[in-house]
Each structure stands twice: as structure tokens, then as C-alpha cells.
Length: 70
Image (tube, rainbow, N blue to C red; front, side, top):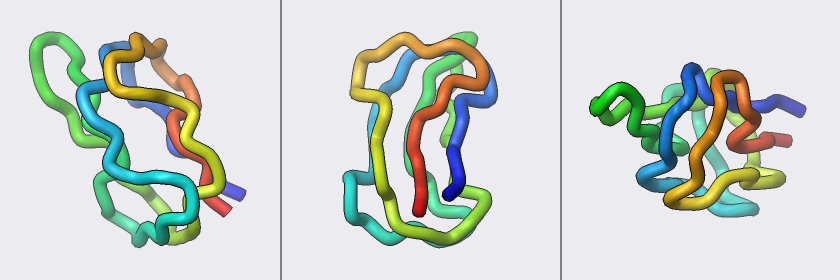
């Protein structure tokens, strides 16, 4: 099991995956707005989305778990 975490605190602009989706290494899973910049959060491993722990509009802290892969 692998967790995709927020690289810094910010606001979730878009969630690109849902439970059951297959993602590959390098795929965008979440778009985070931090310091007035859009920051794509990408998967570092391939897998299947087991859990999405954020929603559009959520404020998240650095290192918050955004997506869990199986």
C-alpha cells in the first residue's frame, strides 16, 4: 500500500482520480493550489486507488495523505 501526500499546505483545486481507478507512475492525481500557484501532485508508483482522502475545496497541511493506492 502506498500513500500520496501533499508536498506543501494549500487548497485542493481538483481531484483527478476516484476509488478503483488505475494510476501509473507519473500520473497526476490531485491539483493543489499553494502560494498562488497550481501544483500537480503526481503518483510516484503504479497501483489502484483504494481511498481518496480529500475533496475539491479542502484545505490541507503539508504531508497530509491525499490518496491511498493498493
